[in-house]
Image (cartoon, rainbow, N blue to C red):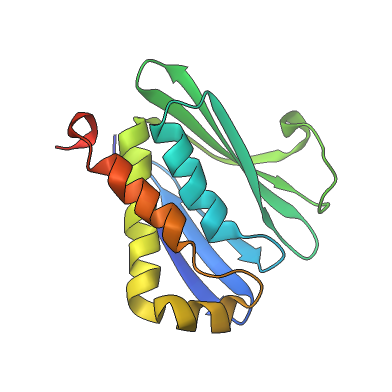
Amino acid sequence: MNLAIAYRLAGTGWAECSVSDEHTKCDVTASYLSDALGNLVLAAFAALSGFRTISFGFDEEPGEYRWVIEAVEVDVVQIDLFEFNELWGNKPNEEGKLLFSTRCSPVVFARAVHRAATSVLEEYGENGYLEKWVEHPFPIRHLELLSEQLALPQNAG
C-alpha cells in the first residue's frame, strides 16, 4: 500500500496537509493553536514503536481535524481522519465526519511522515519554520527520534 503525505506552511500560523493512498486524497489544514507537525511526527514514531492507538488533532478556528491511527492487525495500522465543527469539543470519533480512511504498515506511515517533515525542514530550516508557525518550534527532536527508529534493521528496506 502506498501512502503520501505532503505538508506545507500556507502562511503565518497556517499549514496545509494532503494525505493520499492509491484511491483517495484528503486535504486538511491546521492553525498554530496546535503543534500539528510535531504531533504528526510523534504519532509516526509511536505507530512504529508499537503503540496500539494514537489520536491527535489539527486545530482549526473553529473546528478540528482529528487523526486516529490504530493497530488493527500485526504490522497494519488503520488511519482515519475525521472533521469536527467544534474546536476542543471532545466529541467521540463517531460524531465526526470521516474524510479519509486507509490501511498500511506502520513503516509506510512513518516514512510518509518523515518525508513530509524533512521537506518542511529543508524548505524553511528551524528558524524559518518558527517565524512562520509562531507558537511551536520545528519538531527537530521528534524527527531525529523517528529517523533513528526508521534506521533500525527491522524498519529498513
